[in-house]
Every structure is written in structure tokens, then in C-alpha cells.
Amino acid sequence: MSTQTHHGQASLFGADTSTRRHPRHVLSYGLGLDSTAVLLRWLTDPASRDFDLADLVVVTAMTGDEFASTGADVERYVLPELRRHRVRFVQAGRNQLLTTAAGEGITTFSDTTEPTRLFAEGAYALSTEMLTAGTLPQRGGVRKCSARAKGAVLDPVIARLTGGQPHQHYVGFESDERGRADRDAAYNTPIRTGRYPLIEWGWTRADCDSFVYELTGRHWSKSACTYCPFAISSARGVQSTLQRYATEPAAGALALFVEHVATCINEMQTLRPTGRLYDDVAAAGLTDVLDLFHRRLNDTEHGVYEVRRVAKVRGAGTKAVIARSVRLLDRGSRAEMAAALAAMPGHLRTGGDGIARSVVLARGESPPWAERFYVACPAVVADKARPHFERWFAEVAGDVALF
Image (cartoon, rainbow, N blue to C red):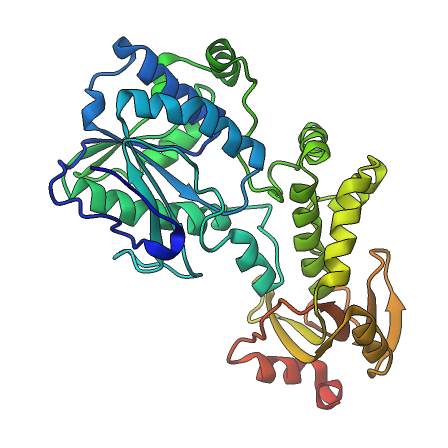
């Protein structure tokens, strides 16, 4: 039994799976080099696994913003092997911002042993979440974007597939990523046991690359959203990403658009820790990327937003809590909103990012501080403020809060 459907025609549960056995072995397939090496070795070398392929299910959570080249490679080299060995492949993803452990907000795009295409476009792209919130994936700490777009999808899907039965959950951590494996193993339960084949085999990333290249003739690209800040956190990562943009200009244009919207709302929000990705793209002379980005800016309806932010210290020695209010005041063409911005209160300033803001109240050097400005921005950001924002802002801003 197999089914492949478009995201508008499928639920979490996809087709009727009542006649299928519950698999005891689940591979989280992230489409990148590491998990591709695991999967291809299992398919080509039966001695590398201690289970039958009929008892395996491969599961992918789609973020909606994967590089097209990664999807093309998976369709060309991996899907035919899955079909040949009749391995069950489940593709799922979010269809809205929030999901639940019961599977609400999740769509199964395909559940089949005969996969012919990758549903990499998903139903609710991570970039939609970022644009609506006027923010970017956070560079430090827990990767919340991955937890929401992948983990929150995989957990209920795997629970449904395994029927609550004990199972082995395989993740592609390399041999030098034992720390990540240890953290993952902390989530083990009597039902779920994490397994890390590459660590068991002693395989490094170089080993994975050599193995996959020998099989496919391809040096497998890193799986990542086109605007992933982790992928461009180093000079080497930036160079590799810019090379991908050169062959996939639309991917680079999306990254610049997501960054631009976030920077409009907060000039401190950039994809690179040292500044804007836009500047790296411009320095590399990627005119196709820049042309697509500027064309999208010009074609997108804009709005004038009021942005207020407050940093409040709630106790001695505690870290300041920052809250934000974003409110759309007007909308129209990009040129119309630039003219509307010029008529807003405050002092019109153009920052080093090239974005004009009419500043009513500039933030201070240290908390508590408040800021308030108006900006013309693509009209994709939703109004949002915490319930207690007005009180906090009034306490810190004083009389400026009234105007």
C-alpha cells in the first residue's frame, strides 16, 4: 500500500495504514550528507544493519525552504533506491504555526514504498513563520526553529507510525558528535531508544562524503534552509553558501528578503553575526540574486509600521526582559509607503543598512530603555504585542509613550 498526495489533500495520518505493521526501526532523514550516508549504506550493505528493511520507516520533516539542489539530488539518487528496496518513506510537515502532540497542524504529504518526488516545498514554510513574526532564526542557544519545524513534526508522526510500540530511532550524528548524541539519548524512554550508526561505525564527515561520492558521483551538499544562520556562521560557511546562491539565485533572494524584513523591524537582526548577508552577496557580485531580491521588494505591498521595544529589569542582578510591539498603520506600494513614512512623527534617518526609519525615541545604552520608530517594510509582519507591553512601555518611556 502506498499513497502520495499534495499538501492540500492529506492529513497527518495520510492513507489508511491499519493493514500495515508498526515499524520498529525509524530513521530521521534530514536529506543531508550524514543521514544520506546512513541510508545508502543500509540499502547497499545488508551487513551494516541488524534488521530487515521491511521493518524500517524513513521519515523526513519538511521545512519548506530547502535548497532545490538538495531536493534534486535526493530525487535522483535516493528515491530510486528506496523504490528498488521497497522501503517505506514518510514525508510530513507543518501546515500552520503551532502543532500538537496529537498531530494537529501536521500534514503527511507522502507515505509510500514507491516515492517518486520530494515534497520539499511543504505546506507552511519556516520562512512564512519568520516573515510573519518579523524575525530570524536565533544564532545562539537552542535551535528553536529546528525544534518547531522538524522536532515538533517528527515526534507525533513517529508516535503514530510506531503505534506506541518500542522502537529504535536512528539519527545521523558523526563520530565526532558524541556530545549531540549524548544529549539526544537523554530523551530515551522505555519506548524510544536512540541509535547513532555513524558513531557505531566510527565514521566522520569525510568518511560519509567519500562513501556517498563513490556511490553517486556527487559531493553531497549540506541540508539547510536557504537562510540558515548556522550555515553562514563561519567564513567557510559563507563561501559555500554564496556558491550555492550563484547556481540558485532564488534561494539567495529569499534569504535576503527574510533578512530585510527582520532588519526593518530591528536593525540588530541580521543573518550574519558580523552584519548583513546582503553585504556579502553584494561583495561577491551575485547580481542575479540581487536583481531577484530587489524585484521582489518592488513587487511586494509595503506598509508603514510603528515599532516599539522596551527592555525592563525585573530585579537586581537579573537579565533585562525585552518586549516588542509591532503595529501596521498603512499599506500600499513601496513608493507610497516611503512617502507616508516621511510624514510620520520623529526624525527621519537612514541607517547603515540603507533602511529609513522615523525615530521618535532612540534606545539607551543599557536597560531599562525604550525605543519607538516608524518604518516602511513589506506588509508581511503581523501585529503583535505582549499583554503587559503597554504598562511596561509607559513605565520606561514616560511622556514619550503618549505621543
